[in-house]
Image (tube, rainbow, N blue to C red; front, side, top):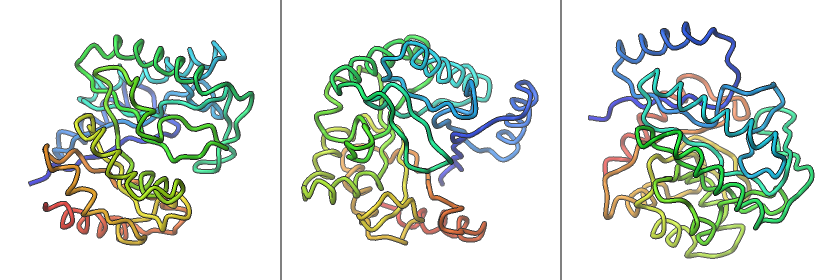
Length: 265
């Protein structure tokens, strides 16, 4: 008997804070749902893109503040899980529109970026103070976009107490990109005990398409089976690109039912 699980994703909030908290708490209690938060709706400007790995002090500080505001927001609306991106090996990022390719400016070394990211994560861990679980997302392997945290060894320095939101679409895309048939197995073996949530979407291996479950080639049931070998199933979130693929409300509702069947492991 799964309790509905709704992720508040990245975007822009135009509602006054206390009013928004009231609306969400009313909805949560009346509908018995669990909320979770991904990235942030608290950005300093519309074109700001969170990068906790930046060497630009202002961008890194503002990025940490975005997540800190999330932690405060989480405490006010009964959220236990927050997830976000571990960063990029670049000082500044921009994006023309949601889900467009990120434009990296002022690249920095991966070593420097990981140092910055780990430092930011340790700061955020103190702010979360063990009552909010923090997770970073595994990225696609795309060096041209300066992504961090895409291969097994990238997670070796992840601070204790920081979890992972495992994106199955990113796993499959990266396995095909690296041409490493054992990549998904190795990632799950290395990270399964740290997985707090799972982003589920489908693709054909050629691109990170974020399609609904069953619309691509990913063996989603088999991947979930491997994750739950030695643990309970984490919370599952369908993360599909509604506008790009012209999905209707019915498409989304039916896909939730489809995932519930797949997740009966």
